Image 1 (tube, rainbow, N blue to C red):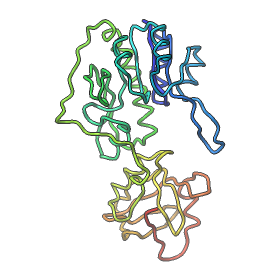
Image 2: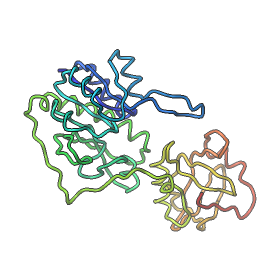
Image 3: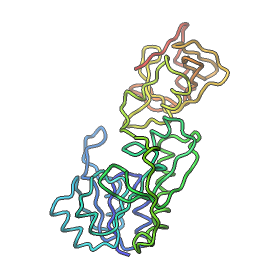
Image 4: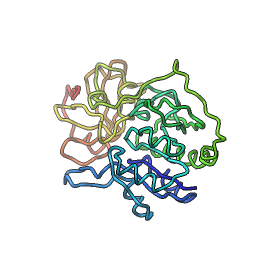
Length: 303
């Protein structure tokens, strides 16, 4: 089966790899190289880097231009597979071949840009992946297959990696029926739709006025682009891992330190820090950081 693949971030890489194992991936579309890191150097997308390693032709684009459309026609795909590409597909593409998308939620829950982080922040027990038709709306198409997993204490990076693998396996499993036109599509129930807007940095700022569970979910949902942060004893710190400090009584806004452990007082209990990255320093286990927290009346606040 001839496949055109469209994707950009790490989430899309397992789908590309599995498709390349099973089918003829004739062309990959991905977003252009972007400036990343402290060196401000241009870095290829994870999908571009992997496609080149696999010897697959790559087109970098942020939209479907006439020139890109010509490349797509030349590729003569039996099916177009998309995973987090980041570009709206025009009718010309949708009419070229069946187009399916690997979406990281159990549609109709969490349509939009940040389904994984939104599922964590909302305290959902489970999330998953859907293989869906691509249409004109944002994640509004019917789906033909879904797979789910328990969220538990998985952070954004762990859950993203797991869903990426699940999505790749589900995609290759359903692709023959999609290309052959025998798959059964399920329309989304609009009454059950929730929207996964892009995560803003301010949303993940820890706050002593909020509950311990709310702050713990912010840490769990955080990442490099939107880290969970606060100010402890007057200094900024990124909280990389934390948990609800069950049974620990700490006043809201206060900091308790003992035996290499640190608790932040919240509105309804305490948040125990597990791993932190103080501003200007490396990431470390909280025991190494706790040694520098001395004195009475230590406090913390929103960054």
